Amino acid sequence: MKMLRFRSPSIRSLDQEILCTIRLLDDSELSCSIQKDTKGQFLLDHVCNHYNLLEKDYFGIRYVDPEKQRHWLEPNKPVVRQMKSAHQPYMMCFRVKFYPHEPMKIKEELTRYLLYLQLKRDIYHGRLLCPFVEAAYLGACIVQAELGDYDAEEHPCDYIRDFKLFPKQSLKLERKIMEIHKNELRGQSAALAELNMLQRAHSLETYGVDPHPCKDFTGATAFLGFTATGFVVFQGNKRIHLLKWMDVSKLKFEGKTFYVIGIQKEKKLVLTFHTSTPAACKHLWKCGVENQAFYKCAKSSQIKTVSSSNIFFKGSRFRYSGRVAKEVIEASSKIQRDAPEVRRAQFGQSRSFNSLSHKNLIMNMEPLVPALPSTNEYEETAADSENSNLRPQALKDEDGFEEEEEAGGALTISETAYSPCASMLPSPVDDSQGGVDLLFSPVQSPARLLRELHADPDIQAQLEAERARDRAYERTRLAARSQMSGVLTNSLRLLSSNERVNACMLSVVRFVSVVVGVLLVTVPALLLLLESDINWSFLHEIRQTPEFEQFHYEYYCPLRRWILCRISMAMENLWSD
Image (cartoon, rainbow, N blue to C red; front, side):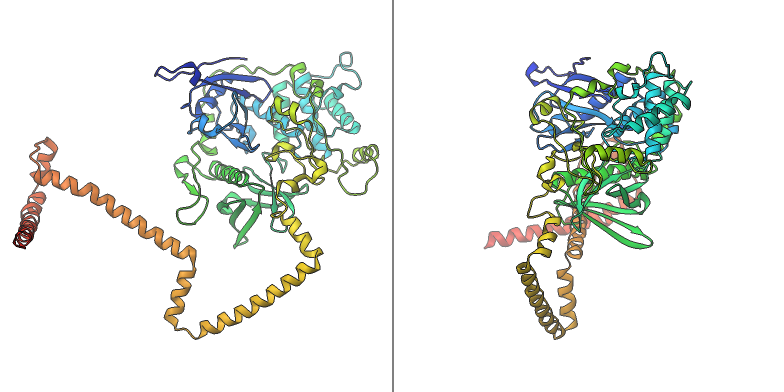
């Protein structure tokens, strides 16, 4: 563990220094001391300098706040302000933030190795879904990169069991991995095996997806994500929506509701989702804004500050401050230096190695569909199904910390369809207590509301009475409106349109602000030119121009005499009274 002490030019006492610990992709840790005004960019640069990494725009630093909500560390804000009331030392994680759309365009082997480590974590924690054949090939690439060629004398018949590659690892999968490792990957170096793994992984649907749990308008559980292609929605293990970035016109949120506004098949599309907390909704919105700017814009100068809402004087404002994907690729192509040394983790130090078994990583062994046989029978069924997807299971938070593991114990999630690890949720929940539904309050859970509406006859009767009252009120309102004049009707419509009124008010405020700003600048400048005796060279040159002399004698002097005359008359009337 390396230490770096960071000091500002001013002298500060030791009690103002804050210790930060950053967990890297290979689970090693890097520590440094910062000051209260140190910004997030310093920590990111510190980690990149540790690796000697130049292609650093793909990476970021993530942390978990005291409410168990995950965030990306913003580079242009002080670290202390972002961590809020978190206990010291600050615990953070260095992770891939933007997955390269084409890994082959990455210039340096070091960057590809770090992306390989991230994808290995995604596979292990169930975020990267893959069919049986793809899973076997990816697992074989990992084994080849860490062990090298198969050697019958060194590797026993069950050597694959030493690797924990997938949340659920069947015997048939291990045999397939062993077969590919023996026959297809022989002779490949670690770098080549890692590159083959990246090429195969980036073609999968969930490549680069960091799932955000939510509820759709029907109350069904969905997972939202952002990729290089666009905005994606998963239900079960199926992608039900893909909205390309060119078709996404706006992302916004209000409270716990997240909106995606776009165009699909030449029609306006509005997707609405509900998160468990306002903080989770804001984090989802920020991730969407950053991903859209990174992958969609051609230059960073095109990035604009976006607002979370159209409501007047309300909403959050946010702007992505880094380089975009095209600029990163161009900068990578211009790198001219000797390739830095890649310090790969040894086999005994790797996360894939069986030494991880001492941690409380409990896998959710529930069947994927209801009413299946026992766990052992299910394992045999899953092993025989080569076309079925390897389902991700609920694991302990990969970005959680050892103290939480010891205090909280092993937790799981009861999602049988698509279940990324517990770290995807603001706070892990117990399988026996309702799973993802517990993230939503009983009153606000869309699924529970729908169940109650269909089950309770009293509620149905009450809803029918409310509908009858609404219809009667609507008929009365339409009759009254028909008696009004056209001008009054248009006025009421204008006043009832909040968006139109707010837009008009905002335009007026902007116009008044611009006029006041122009006056505050031009009036003092004119008085300086016309009334002062300052004889600076540039002021003297302006006063000598014909246009200025004409303005001075034909307009300004008569106006000044008229104002002075009016002031003197007012003073005389005041004294006479």
